[in-house]
Image (tube, rainbow, N blue to C red):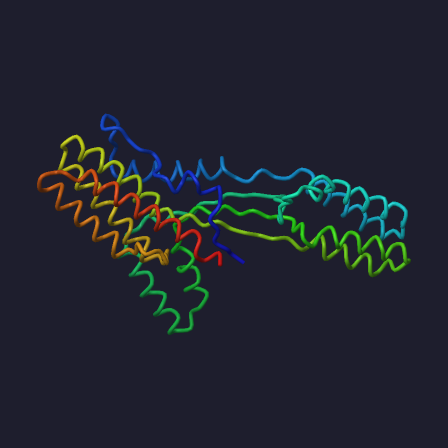
Amino acid sequence: MKKLLLSAVLASLLTTTGLYASSEIKTVKQVNKGAVAHGTQDALASQKKLIKEAIDSLTYTNKALIALNKNDKKSAKADIEKALGKLEVILSAKDAPKLLPIDSAVSMVEFVGTKDDVERTVDVVKDLLDDNKVQVARVLLNSLQSEIDVTVVSLPLVTYPDALKLAAKYIHDNELEKAKSVLEVALSTFDKTTTVIPLPLLKAADLINVSAALSKNGKKEEALKYLDAAEEQLDTAEALGYVSHSSNTYKSLHEVIKQVRKEIKGKNKAEKLFDDLKAKLKDFKEKVFSEKAK
C-alpha cells in the first residue's frame, strides 16, 4: 500500500531548492533538470537512518525459526533472547519510537510532457477502458507519474517484542508449531510507508526562484518567461492528480501568479508578491505530501 507522509525527508524539499543567483541563470530546461537532480539528492541524503539493533534482532529471530524447524528448542530460545536483547535499550527509552527503520529506498519517475499531454493520455485511457483493454490502459496510466518516492520499511515496536515473548512461552510449553507460527508472522509484519514528492511542484518552486531573481534585477521579459514555465508545471501537477487540501489551491496559486505577472509588467514591485507566492506554494506542497497520510 502506498502511503503519503510528511517527514524529515521533505524538510529541505519544502523550502525552495536550487536558488540561482542572477549571474547563474539557466534555461528553463536546465532549471527543471536541476530541480529533479536536487530533489533526488536531498531525498537520498535524508533517508532515515536504519536501526542496526532492529536489523540484528530480525537476524536472531530468523535464526530462531530455523532452529525450531530443526526441533532445536535450546538454540531457538537463546536466539529469541538475543533478539529481545538487541531491542532492550530502545524499549527502555522513555520516548521509544513506534517504528524502527530496517530498510529504505529512493526511486524517481519523471513525466516530461505538458498538461495537454496528460489530458490526451487520459482520453486514450478512457477509450481503452471502454473497449475493455484494461492492461493496455494500465500501462498508460502508470506513465502518468512524475515523482520521487522514498520508501521506508520499519519494524513495529508495538507488536514485535510481544510476539517474541509469546514465541518463547510456546517453546517453554513445548508447543513448537505455535512458536513457529508466531515467529513467521513476526518476520512478515512490517510497516511500509512511501513518501511521494511530486516533481512538477519542485520544478515550479525553482522556476519561481529564478523568476524572482530576474525580476529583482530588472530583467522583466526573462522573469515572465520563467514565471510562465512555473505556471505550466503547476498545470501539469494538477492534471497528474497531485491534489492538496490546503486553503491554497491551484486556483489561488494561479491568481497570485497573475498578480505577480501584472506587477512585473508594471512598476515591477513584485518582490513581496513573490514572497507571498513562495509561501503559498510551500503550504500547498506540505498538504500534498501530508493529507493522504491520514
